[in-house]
Amino acid sequence: MSHWVYVFSGCPATGDYQQIADDQEPGDVVFRDRPGGLGIMDGFVRESVDDMMMVARFRWVASGDPSAVAPAVLQASALPALRGGVHSQ
Image (cartoon, rainbow, N blue to C red; front, side, top):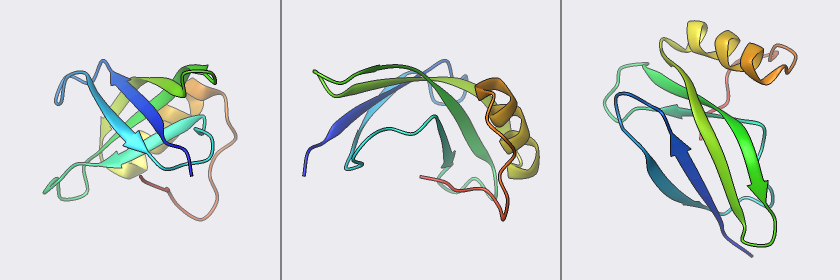
């Protein structure tokens, strides 16, 4: 299995950082629960993908309660609303 490098940028609470992911291919959005965040999450949209280098770049869109973050991130990515809840990484 190959590994992708996800580069997250623009989040005021966590700053820019990278993460190794075991996914086959990066999705259009990423929702991340904050450790100890009591339901607070960060939402990012994919800006670019380099298939050769296996690097996906994501920019921060919103933070807060999942019920507010998910619609903002989906709107920024132009994806239809999720049915059945928010999926986080």
